[in-house]
Image 1 (cartoon, rainbow, N blue to C red):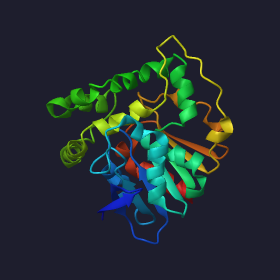
Image 2: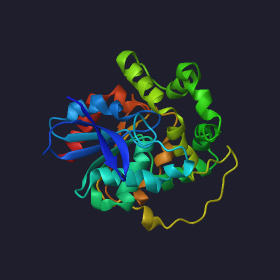
Image 3: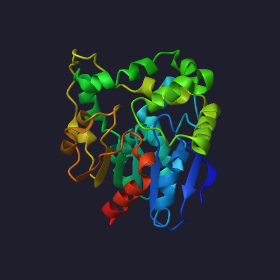
Image 4: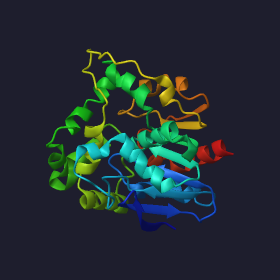
Length: 287
């Protein structure tokens, strides 16, 4: 059964959902855009016999801390929130979409807090930047990011009961799972927070998106700073039209201990489409 509480992290209030009992191995589950902590419910219920699953509404989402200023959504602040939630004992970190960026941030910059890293349709920041700057298919697929950075994007996506946001959510992907109580709970979270905070994640990001056919030269990066020295499982829904195969090409350069598992009939929303299969993959990988 899911439990919901409010926790103070670095002086700010965050909504946190939990499944499973204290004493089981802890698993931190980090949602992406435009979801919220409750989106992990199906998967967490399938894992809660073995793991104490913890899913916060991250900064800008649901009833959690949601400052207006764009600079408050830089990655160091987002990682700092979750480092405060973890405390001192390392745990399993699972991320999806933007939640994967925070998960990678923890694994790279706070490896003392991460025992294992699991990502579902999410990207390593350097590998993804290379893909979006190349001027190819991923640059074209990521063009929506520049649209979201427009100051008027919040109001446009909130209009008509989030009609345009729903179109974005389901663009060329299967959202047949997003109906009934699941849809109403998601919309309730959007109404609670508004969209400004969650879209500020895009505005605060330094990610460069090239125009198709016009690659951008990037400065040299200190690769060692972005290494993941933890066992890493990447679960990939192959039908993702937002994150293409090139978005993870070269990941092995940054992750010495990497396991890839593909789900051919899944897409970006693979966690909702195939929660039983994802749970089985996670259980088998963790041993």
